[in-house]
Image 1 (cartoon, helix red, strand yellow):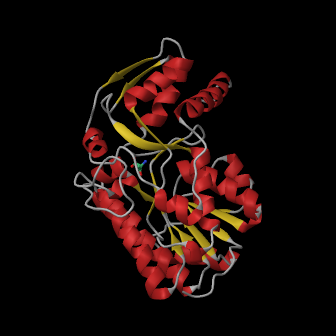
Image 2 (cartoon, helix red, strand yellow):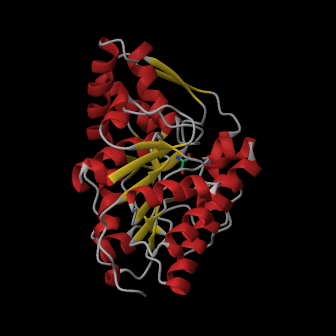
Length: 326
Ligand code: AKB
């Protein structure tokens, strides 16, 4: 492994997405606004994202568009958030492979040639499949996903570790569970119901959920997701035994328990259930994960539980609703 370089200039791909948009702002607070370059593919950035630091449109599958921004800003770290998620990935498997694998390879090659300090690339609970133990899923276990998203994320984890061991490029990654937030809506995932339910609770006090009531999945509130990502980026590489594939647990609940938590703060809230094709995807994923490796190797520990998250989500969304913003 080459000597560790300090993170000074970060480029975020997928910065307009659900996690990227909040992560970019958090990174700007930490490293300085001009030192964190946000990039997106098509979607226009929010005013806050655009006005708080540099922003560019790039296409990660076209090396030259990435290269131009890397050179211009002397980038030494890439946080690669651009991805096609599970539900859209099942509708467009070739696109999912192209963005998630070929896009990642472009990023890794660029980082290797520029001898960058670090690449952070998230993985997902989607790397697991029906053959994996679903309860308290171990970090190192059977990876036989049945979605193209999962297949591409397994490939991404293997590529990350390959670049670490072969070239000494410091690649790190964590397996996000469903991420819940009130700023930017997620797009195209199986766990999106756990965000949509809050929006619809505030808008009309009812929701029709696309997975069954007893569907239990690992989830995480956005502040914990940002904390986990930045903690992993900042930890000393010599402490890591894993690199691209950390389980990160926070909370685990069924769709019915989520609805019950909302009903505690929104009297009269009603949830009905009409499972669609995403049910099968959810049924192939863990119900909870064992994140001992993350806790031991870089000190991971979440702050939020279900009810605390529900209170915070509803408070923020009610404020947005009252201001006509949702
Ligand atoms: C999805 O549902 O596809 C994502 C994920 C768990 O990676 N939120």
